[in-house]
Image 1 (cartoon, rainbow, N blue to C red):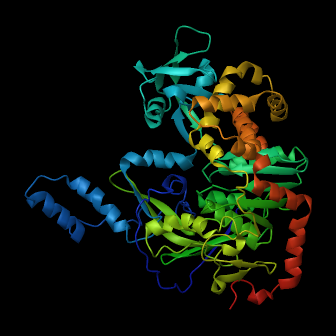
Image 2 (cartoon, rainbow, N blue to C red):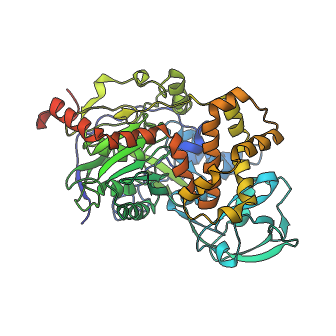
Image 3 (cartoon, rainbow, N blue to C red):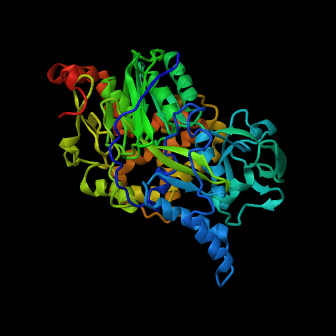
Length: 572
């Protein structure tokens, strides 16, 4: 049964005036990569093959100027490069999420959300300027030839990569490649004097979107989702099936740090939780008629209690998911205000081989909210908004959040929600830095905790690998002098010991160290169950569920504020 979509043409508002766009230096890696939403029109619809993007004829002003320069300018010029330089200048006048992707960057940009790439199937780290295999993809090319966690990659195709200060991106570039191609690696293995040579045929390596799915209590399941990529919906279904097999009665969906992805994938995921005909989202733009999307009633978790976790880096598709849950009173949203990205991008291929991700519409939550934050003051101010929030105290005090009463809306059950700048959580959870000290920050900033955990795991891999679940592994680590060994290791890294600060942060340091050790042995199935004990947002969600406060909050609001059917939506 398809998800219901209806399209209706309405009188369009005058197009908003917008300002600059430039790829910012600050937060770009976190926010730009995943922060666009894919097209939701049918493949046969207008623009599906890029025909909506009209390239100016040679008689156009811009092309005429380029031609004139190429033919008459006093010095020789690269006309193609001139065009490459002009495109960003044109896009500066649009919104912060319309971006041009040069041909040389397009493959990497698409891989992020397509969910796979060609490679050898290992996760590695580079301690002491040497590539060390941290984990091997199950069933992947490296596992098939016998490469093991802890192996050091010394050579790639006869080129030495160890001890030569090679950038990580260069190593990745040497190991990745087209599926079916071969790469030769020389491996140094513990207790072996000579290098072991392997010929690896590169394969299709999946990029997983669901970091982990496990039971945080006997009845509460937890799913951590890092992006909305092409394969994320299928990963969600697998995660839900895993939790249900363990008698899961309530689900926590963690979208913190998730900067978005494909709109159609977000819609499919929301559909798993909503009842038939409940609205998921609608989109609208000057050149895009309004399109409403409703649940089709086929979801597997329509009656399963759900809680959504968000933070200031949850954006785009994450906000669609959270907004649909909130506006339909399907569950509570817990955490801190989300990023505020409510624009829909469509990718158009260009004759040059590059692509344009063009904003074609805005999306609105079921109550009618646009959660797009303002960008009239330019792209730098737009991305510095996160820093402004921090400096303003928003991460620590709910009352510091600025809300616009003119953008007040009502959920289906009558609860008040706000538009104009992100999703406001139903339950605000401040950042807890009470056990953070300068000593703890130095351990983290220098990578000391991570490096120690990697070295400890490598030295004790045989013993640690005998533990098949995180509970038993954690019990074993609790009996070892891990804390003292870390302090000794830190001294070798010139991290000066501070007894008072260490005592204040010791529980956090100990937990984080053991979590990283567990990740090296059991991957995320080991990391998250341990680190969650210091996760104030997750612990608050568990508390709300166990005390049955989620349903009680919804019911109280429904009884006190439920509006007439004709007045639901934006308050007039």
